[in-house]
Length: 346
Image (cartoon, rainbow, N blue to C red; front, top):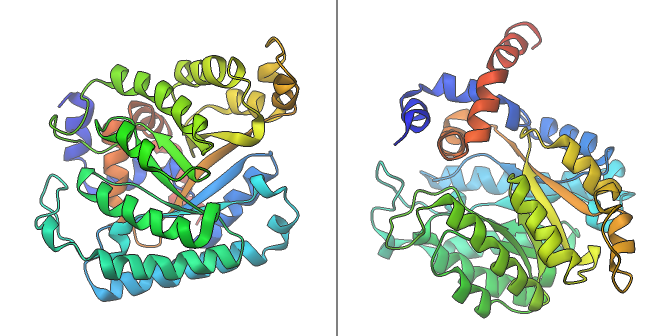
């Protein structure tokens, strides 16, 4: 581990919470909804996630179900979102580990993967997916480490069969298996492609970040070839530029077929403004009308997490800080401001 990773590992929970302040919407669902409305006013979409994973009891699972059902209800009935263009409306993200009791060791690996209860987990997520589809709220089934990939993709295939493109899932470029997983996806589905933040064994994943980033380009191209709606999720500006230049512009990909994504709190505002306004593409050569659609602006979506229970959110926040240098330094710089706000503006 480098100095940053060692520092994050040693930080106590209150410090992790403090450092995570810039990219967590707040301590309540209302805070996340307020932030989502603020972003919508800037023509930026959002996907809302309840921070917390690794359910330890049936009560935990019931609590997550309650929160997600309430969140979907709020998003589907909020008048401020109803008037938004379809693709600008907020979506919801969830992790299967919030709906399954699967104890892990200190490194984050499930202790008994053969006993993971995918049947009941799938039934619970299906209940949420059915509500989301009926309320026309898009739901993303997020991806976790390699132990969860088979089960998550099998679950997603069934959800897509029942609810179509209202349900999406996530693939990680670092895993060696991902190109094969892409070929098994149903055409016309919805996928968020990212590098992934889980510290995977070298048996299963690339260890070089430049290699993981470069792998996103051919993967993104293949997903679009399969008529899959692509959510290209990264903070790496050169990688975003490569995606837009080599795949979108050169491949004449219409703006309706993809979006870009970043995390709340990562300083990419100037780029985001250029993307959603279309000015990013002002000097891009035309091609069969595609560039004209790009110049009207593309969808950019921010990942907007909130924490109702910080004890359950700490593992996610620690992992983000450990494996995302930009987040760590953003949190470090903003920690005094976040501390001041928490002390004097409650």
